[in-house]
Every structure is written in structure tokens, then in C-alpha cells.
Image 1 (spheres, rainbow, N blue to C red):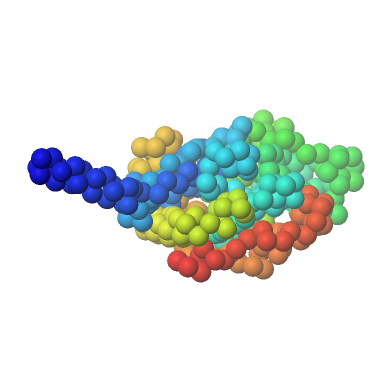
Image 2 (image 1 turned 30 degrees about the vertical axis):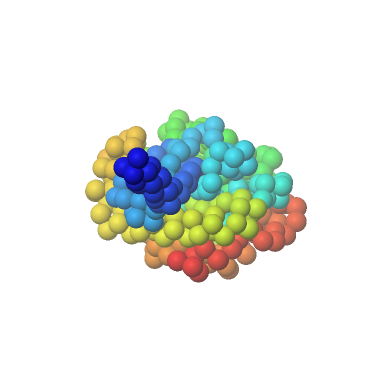
Amino acid sequence: MKKLIVSMLAGAFSLASAHAWAADTVTLQLKWVVQGQFAGYLVAKDKGFYEEENLDVTIKPGGPDIAPEQVIAGGGADVVVTWMAAGLAARDKGVNLVNIAQPYKKAGMQLVCPKDGPIQTTDDFKGHTLGVWFFGNEYPFYAWMNSLGIPTEGGPDGVTVLKQSFDVQPLIQKQADCISVMTYNEYWQVIDAGFKPEDLIVFNYTEMGVDLLEDGLYVMEENLSDPAFKDKMVRFVRASMKGWQYAMDNPEEAAEIIMDNGGQDENHQARMIGEVAKLIDTPDAKLLVPAYERTAKALLDQKIIEKEPSGAYTTEITDAM
């Protein structure tokens, strides 16, 4: 009988210990497919950095038909990677997203045009066709056109906007005079398609001072009232940035990890990580408030959002890291 009681007590203790040490679950929704753009998160999972923070992280890839804002609003994720313009637009419509960390300090968006084409400067845009992605990626483009005073409804005094596919075919097939690219991805697809850098006119959003913040981490506002959730996010962001540092220091190994998780073209992934590192700079995930204010103002000026956002970001998570 004593042996039975001891056995039962030992079993109860083991069960209690298991519950006490069970890892906290986190589901992360990416903005796009698995690629170097998200290397830090994939590396953090592969190298055990999340596990070190007692986290069990599930990473869900995105795609052309997946809007992270809709996923988290529907309860399909705890945290999402998205662009601030899309996050603020969603918040303006009642999806109370809050930026808790901003790994990307600079924007990677550019517009590229063939040098032998009709566009040499921004003064040449009027009357021509410019390509841009939609699904929230169009907001920086429209804000830029608004700052230039150029209508986007076509006509001789405006531009015709081509809803661009997620590749560079509109430039190759001459469906548009210029197309949108990211410094770390589609720009290199243009180069791989046979263009040389000297063959291109490049309008870089950051260099022009019209960049809007891109890949940030967002959660639902109501969850931040839970101290346990906030603590979980501190650990998640800390481990994620450790993953980013490792990826930036070891791009070839990080590219292999991306390939193991469904990425394509290992050399392209390694190159992508190198370009992304320029946008992240110091991997501390701290939001630059002037950049936030510039982003919000651009969206207000373009009437992408109707009211000035309040409570759309918090520094509590990164301050606690």
C-alpha cells in the first residue's frame, strides 16, 4: 500500500512539474512565403532560441491570398509580421493592432525603370504606367504619389496604376514603365533577368525620405492587458532578435535553414539576408518614433486612414528586453 501511495505521489509530482515547465505557445503569421525576409524567426526556431525562452513557436507562412491582419483578427495567430501602413489601416477599420517591435528600421521598397525608357526623374511620371503590389503593399506608393501631387486615376496629368503581380514580368513584358521591387528580393530578380544595375533608374523610398515602416511585429491590443501575454512577447521578441543577429552573422547557414523550411534558391536567400541586414541595422527591434509619425502622417494625408491613430504602438515589450 505504501508503495502504491509513493508511486501515486511521484506520478502527481511529475505531472505537476510537467505543467509547470510546459512551454508557452506562440503562433507567428508571416507576411509572405518563407524567405530571407523572415530569417530571424526561422533561425530562432531552428537554433533553439525560442526553446531557451520556454516558448513553443509555430511559424505560419504567408502568401498572396493571406492577409496577416485578417488572420490575427480571426484568432489564427498571436503575433504577425506586417507593414505599418497595413497595420494602421486595419486599426482604423476596427482591428486593434498594436506594434510591439520594429526589427526593420528602413524600408526596402523601390521603383525601378529601364534607363532607356521614358522615365528619368519623378517629373516624368505623369502619363505613364507604374506597377505596384496590392494587399496593403500599395499604401506607401499612393502616399508617395500624393506627396508629389500626382493623381493615380490615369490621364495625361496622372499615372495609371498597374496592379502588379508578385514577380518582375510587368517590366520584362513592358506592361509598365516602372515596377515596384524590394531591395532584397525583386530587384535581384530584375538583375537575374538580364538587366545590369547601370541599365536601371532606381527610386529608393528611404533615400527620397518617403519610406513607410515595413516588417514590424503586431499583436491585438486587448491581449496586452494580460501580464502573462506581455511577458511571453518579451521572450518572443528577445529570442527573435537573437535569431536575426545569428542570421546576419551567418547568412549561408541561415539560408540553409530557410531552404529546410520550404525556401527556394539558396544563393538568392543568402543574398536576401545580406540585403535585409542593411534594413535592420542594429537588431534591437526598437521602434523609431519619428518614423512612426512620418508613416501615420503620410497615411492621413492620403486619406488611407481617416483619424489620427492613438495607442497604435507600445515600447513596453522592447523596453523590457
